[in-house]
Picture 1 (cartoon, rainbow, N blue to C red):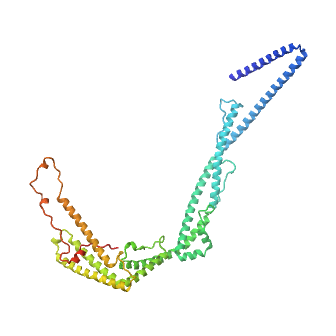
Picture 2 (picture 1 turned 90 degrees about the vertical axis):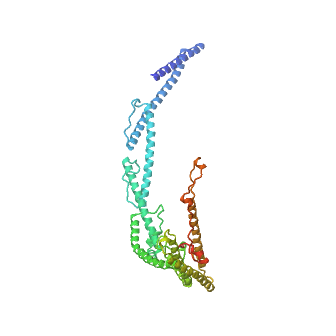
Picture 3 (picture 1 turned 45 degrees about the horizontal axis):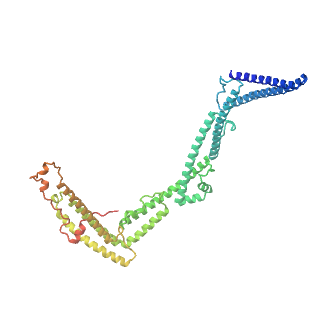
Length: 467
């Protein structure tokens, strides 16, 4: 009602303005004593302008109403169309909005804007999905075809179906890529390893082209035919590779056994033994086998020229190990109570004499060898033979000293406990002695009794590292 009142008020203002204007005009005309005919003419002209203005306003407002109704019909039609395409319910005019009103037009315009945003979002998603499917179709050489018009918005169910299809095609593409990559990699490795496989591949242009193709390229087509062809080539070449692998494994094992024997004879340290016992295709090859054979031939020549010295060192090590066994028996707590020590003492003296003789013989033989072959130096664990023997004895002697020191410290700790005292007991001195405090420590048994001074420096020894 407030709007109607404002219109009535405006009409009253206009009416008052016209009446006031006519009064002013009458006064002005009275001043000049204007005739009634002239006054009527002037009033008619003024009213004609006012009438024209009113007619123009009515015409304009009528056009506005017509345009509003047309706009409402168009917007309503667009809203209904987009709602159908978006699979939404029809538009319902709110109860508080009058049909054909400006408020309805504004509501429809807002509805059109919201639907256009939703439509554009769905359209962009559909466009991206179409491009994705077309790309996957090309990469897989698939016969996939769309069942709906690409220029219209897909139904929700169709969009979901196409999305599921795209995911399946992506998974298929990933699986084919893995298959082709694995087949390519294995066949390439076979070509590099086995000469028979390389000859077979070089004679097949199609296979060579497949192996040289970059499957990471965006234009590579993972057709089912390509996968099947690579599988067929793989099955054809695998027997050749298996035959080569069986042969090289046999040759490798044969060479390794010979080389391992020479490693032991030449006393090569384990950290310098660079070949594994089993042939590993991923690490080894024909070139590695050739290097192994060359290493064997080198060590054969080395052992042939130095066999006498190596044999003497091996004899010394045998005597050394036997003395260590005697020493280990002597360390047993009940050795001197339950064992007849005379045979061990006799054998120990014999071994000491033999080791001294072998040491001198090794030094003499090595000097002769260097004199005859100045460039053929013998190294056992990085040392010359005599230095190696001395280092083994010295290392063992140091270890024995360390063990004796630990034993001495442990006995001292057990014999000298630190009792806890109260203030009263601290003032008294005990008149009793414990067995631990009264017992004298027995001297440690001497090692290798009855030996010479040179022998005693060797006999306190340990097992050398056998690598």
